[in-house]
Image (cartoon, rainbow, N blue to C red; front, side):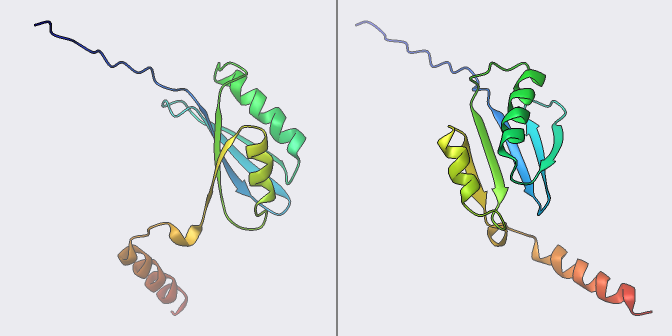
Length: 123
């Protein structure tokens, strides 16, 4: 009888991570590779997709990534809605829209901060 040995080795998949903070006049972008490097923070004019594409390319250079590196992004649902999601996914960027009300928050901390803010002003 012959023993069969299978070796499972996986190389880590390197991706460029992009997080948006979408404001009315300005978007804040944070780029990271998720490997303990300092993130790259940039501001661009809101809805300036040409500047967005340029910043993605610059971030890939900054982190030493090939031009064809996968990009994944996320932002909080709100003002800019789904047009941005459609734009990103049409360009091969994986995107996740986060509903802020579905983010789990420690209720005890939330109550404590509300109590502090109420007592701060009453003095």
